Length: 170
Image (cartoon, rainbow, N blue to C red):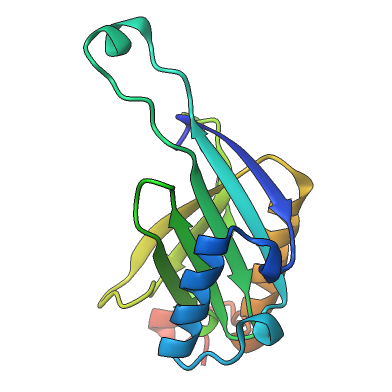
């Protein structure tokens, strides 16, 4: 996480890296999510660069990592992200907004920014905690806020003062 320097920009889905765009189009078609361009409400792309290795790691044959690119999309029903580099295949994941919660990533031990996701991610069979690294630019906060608002729209938070195990949230 904190081993990267990240930069995030807001863009239209048509302006993300071509290999990410192609992987996203295929994912949308395969999973019947509709038209990629029409369904996307907000899109951004992050470039992550591995921080410089120490002299000992370099001396022991450490490799320079390639840039990692991540495209994040918000639709009215899903959070979708594609991640990869020029040397690795593209991995696309999605989460149904009804089954996740998000918050900006914060840690006392790591200086990094991004989106922390909990819930059912992709094809997971149980609750998962995930993290998508993003840069410190204002779009990161905007994207986190928009995702949270979209989640609240499809799955409003409970107004009950009682915990769910005591019948609250019904």
